[in-house]
Amino acid sequence: MHMLLQVDSNGRQMVLRDPVSLFDGSLAMEHAQALHHQVELAGSLNDVVRLEHTEHAPCIVLQHNSGSDYSLKHNKINAGIRRYENYSAADMQSRWKSARLRVSQRLNDERLYLVHCIDHMMLSWRRVDEALKPLGAAYPAIRNDEHLIEHSGFELSEWTLRALEVAACRALYALWLDVGSVLVAVSGTGSMAIRGVWSIAKQQLPIDRELLSEAITAWMKRWKREAEAVDHNERNERIQLGADPEFILVNDQQRVVSATEYLLESDSMYVGIDALWYRNKLIHPIVELRPPPETDPNRLFASLYRLLKETATAITDKRLRWLAGGMPVRGIALGGHLHISGVQLTPRVLRILDAALAIPFAAAADQNGAGRLRKFGGLGDYRRQFHGGFEYRTLPSWLVSPALTKAAIACCYIAVLHNKELAIQLKSADWLDDAYAGEDREQLHAKALDMLQLLSKLASNTPEYKLEKAIAPLQHAIRQRKTWNEQDDIRKRWSLLEAGEIDKAYT
Image 1 (cartoon, rainbow, N blue to C red):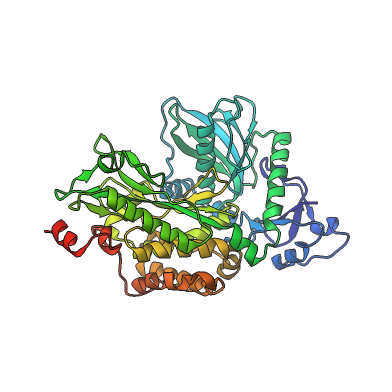
Image 2 (spheres, rainbow, N blue to C red; image 1 turned 90 degrees about the horizontal axis):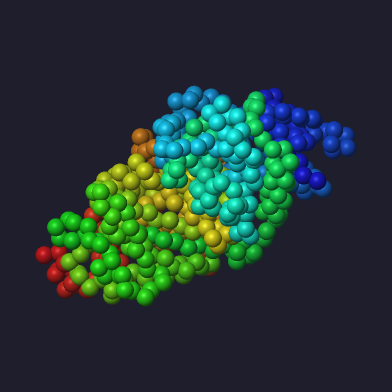
């Protein structure tokens, strides 16, 4: 038997018999005591733990009006609803813009879709008009074994449906909601804008009860599998990390050079080229490293170093500078995306990654690269991947130096491997938004150091990888208020140039 527990404004525990009522506002609640054979439950949220290992497991707690702290624990979802209820329409639009989401403006040939989501999964979608009147049937989000949405044969393509899920889930995430419904405008070319969000409180939205019931049941079964206890060794074996960090090539006239001039005929499957529009022209300046995923974080670093050496052999012009970071050249944003598998994607896991990665790297970032944040780098930026995991996309390119690369890999690995321990020790992540905004640099540095100290402590539980040593240089740099320099040629830091070549390249 599965239970969804809801907590009212007085802190009383209530059981929600019908999960579908999350999406139509008819919150039919009864005291948990009535379903638990007269077992009396006190008002404290901690009493829910007593139910977690009974025949009723899993118990999923929806913290409704019981406090403003966003709990990071796995079984407590939607804990940010109190914060959401205090947002004005202007507040919500501001938060969506901070998350790099498009809002409000009318799109060409647009259609409106109402999307129901829970725990970063789209359950169903349907086309509606501006008054939310249905203009078609509701459709389920059909998924493959890797949890990716598959083409359903309905009016939206597979790619559009996957983008629709990301847009809707990120709109909820920006408002600290884990459960809710989102109105998304989709243009004829696939562009999207967020038009509205509804929480689980007092709403009347068009839903298909049977469809939603099946979708939520499938979600709860998956939730139960993830919630089951897993020992440390098993977690260690199933966690895999990959990456696709980027850098660009710049000549001695400070002009961006297309990577195709050197890498187009390369037969490497692990070094790629990305294109972008720059000054109204399609160019291919970005070099992207794509090492195979690894269970050992040190082997991932070794793979990246090997690929950099391989690339240095292919790019023979020593006068070019290799630049990484956030935006070393105005208009060209670079990313240091990390691919993660072996842990379920949830808003709580994303917030832990934001705390463990986005905050320390924001504290150490070159402020000259802050232009990237106008379009990219929002908290909780992600994309599901074909391997069944997901890609964490918030960070700029950390290829600036070996030390930063090691720190990014180590912090990510520890955060994912020990996400349950981090959830208990962090308790809440309410400070994330303010710290990441960076307006108070002292707060940002303090939170970054707190996180790195916590990660370093947890790293001692995985002594075989010696990850504390990988974190220490980043800690030192932040204590010293040092930042990286995006104009430095990364080949110098990575020792990819001989002494004579360095003289030749910089004279």
